[in-house]
Image (tube, rainbow, N blue to C red; front, top):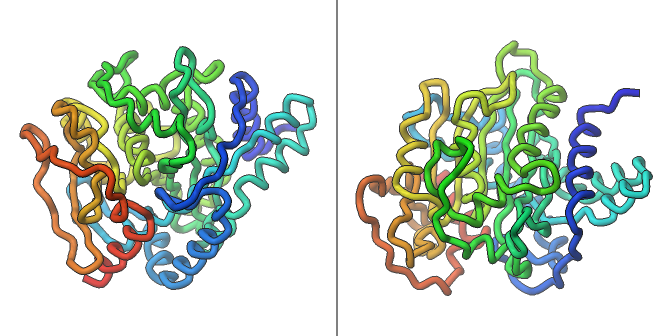
Length: 381
């Protein structure tokens, strides 16, 4: 019997994990950066449910319009930004060690069941939005070939169940402070020249670049993501006869992965057949490339692509990272939000020297709760 699209994705995922050394789940700590540690995860699940219920109309309107604000250059729509934020906040870091062990033993039904179990809470939240979730890549405890401390990304796709409004939201999770290896990705900010035509041969951070394009077994995280999207496109109800819109989102480290992945998807031939590139929404993202990288993303978005939105909560120090390297430049387009002020569009950093001053240790404005409050203010403005 042929594998279903979901099983195709699961098989690729398990094959990849089966070929790299598995590490154990880090010991849970306290606090939320940007989401709670695993011992507090159930509490955060209920927070996400409450946020979903409180903003039901906003979320459903955004989904009805495919979270797409129009071709590049269109004004920002805060309803769409809010749903993208919810996607980035909901992406969890449940592990799949047991699923991989079952797959290794040839127990495929148990392996598939364990994968489903690992994302059960995410799917419950997505259900409030009229959507489903599919895990695409979980390499957040694995190291790419040749790197002993650099992890890969955790990435999943939220997809619509409305046949009249088909879309996919690709969401990358942010940093778990209890995982040293993710922190290493965050802090590995030597610029690395991209190879093999990736991101227009510009220079980006070593940590995020190797997380996406370094080898994990026989493939890369980015290849796993695009192959997963290709399988997922077979599942999405679509009565429009049009290509399925794909937007990308992430918070913190997830914002770095999102920006680099979106830039890669903007290159001709990178998107899976049957899809079109929508918007990029990042929240509290550090800088992740040089001036040429930011310009390449700006200059290569066609009229059929969406826009790029870099959303920063006022007082969040993380977007100033790495303040110790002056060669880093943020991608466009920057909006500053606040819990008590209307959103303000900020000047581009491209072709100029930005302000690199920062106190990196006051992170209260960086957590998901703070972004939620500020986005609620933006919606009301």
